[in-house]
Image 1 (cartoon, rainbow, N blue to C red):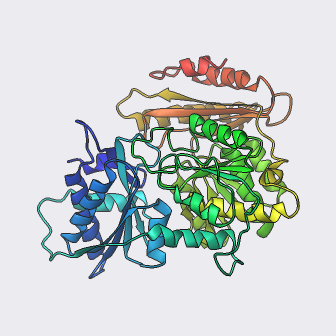
Image 2 (image 1 turned 180 degrees about the vertical axis):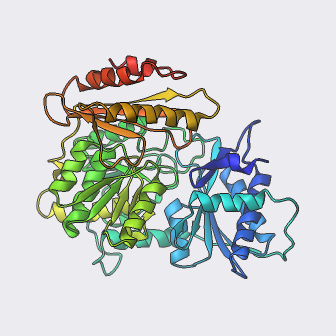
Image 3 (image 1 turned 90 degrees about the vertical axis):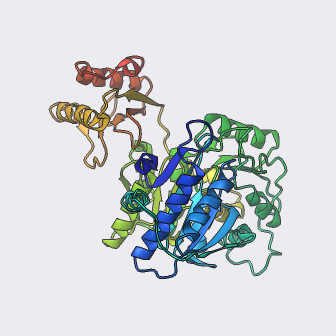
Length: 496
């Protein structure tokens, strides 16, 4: 078994159902053994590991396989059953505690896929640590240790829900507090793990009539549980408008991402979601640095600056963004928020854990304050300038060594850009090449060309603050790329 073929960023991902399944129960068992061995080799004599899962059809079996593998090498295992990814991490830093946690999930991917996410007490593991664990899995032979134990942790989501209650209403002294009385809030759990959030809001006084897809269903029959999915967002928009609700909330499968829809049916995700939580954080922390991924808009940078903050664009990948914010804080630069346009949002105050429900809890706390002023969350981003045009296309790289080929293309574009005065190369270019152009006004359009984290493609993002700017940028980029060998430029020419 090539365990390294299952690496996806800092997670294990693979097909778990069907004839081509690579993430089988036997593979999960071996990875469990490897995680246990890793902990032993780090000097932990009697490791304790917590394991939970999302609603996918293959998840209960993969949870059992992981638990059995861990137990076989002397680990004390607590199985949590249906859970969320953030809750599994909180099980380490709160009660019951432990030395590691594992979540069986493949986030928003199709139902036949699955995976494992790993946590240590200081946060999610990085790719280097994952490789170390999988290297142990790939070792020959067995691991000679006495068996550990497996016990069941019952109803942990109730405890996690109480944590969220305190975030939403920190001054409430008991469960009788009803801060949402008179508010109509719809929850769309996408048949993932997050249906319990509707019960939490109802217990806080909210009218949750019209909430949808709350029951876990591993086939995800209604829509993909993904706040970036157009069909999913349209479904929530329709529910908010038809029920005349004040707010709609949507989570992905394992609840580490979220987005909202306002009372007028407007999506608040991607740049708008980043702006919204940034406005709240910067009100409390003037001068702070907000770390995002590389594809955020120029309007967002202006918004963060106007609200007293500094915007740092870093690399795509939620672990990259989180690790950058951590590094900044360690070096003396206060960076309390790390957030990706996909909806992964991690706050320093919450262990830099990307937790969609914690994000929503912070937004709802602010909504309670704004309501007393006859305002709503959308008012906080009224001055955010949305781009007039935005598009993403992807160039396939057929070369077997796609990373080398992709980097050669990026290097060639970088050289072209640096030699052309009308191409304004971004001063902080952590990923790929980002260039802005003056179209009727300075820096009114930009593109970012980068290499995908996992796939043999070059994603290209273009945004313009003025109408008809995308064809101008596309034409300029085509001139730089037209002699590139081995890359189909049809996605680019279609924009011209």
